[in-house]
Image (tube, rainbow, N blue to C red; front, side, top):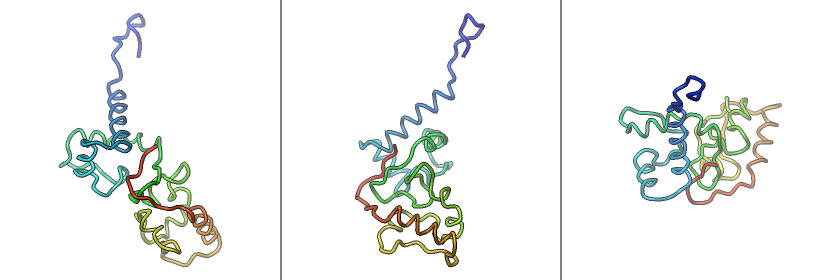
Length: 161
């Protein structure tokens, strides 16, 4: 932003500032509990995570604007405390979603949108594939299963960090 001395008008980048403020609201929505968060969760999210929600014409202008801040979710990850996180598609273990870390497994898994509760609330893990796992795919699955073997789910809402 050029200063007046440099021939500029010193006008701030309003698009960037709007994205920052909307990101702040999204962060508060994910990590705090009060009446307005409860209203938003009940109206728009219900039992889904932010990454599962897509813009719709029936949503308010504010909410659709908030959902348009794609960079927000890419800069953090979900901390597992509840059961809303999707096992394969959300970023909760490591710096990338499991579908990125294990693309060969994700391509042949039956339930791509399974939640953590779907997968972890049984022993062995509740994951099925459209074909038998052999060779490297079997080794990848064993590695992933070992990484998540000792995760216990708690009651409550997942948080964003």
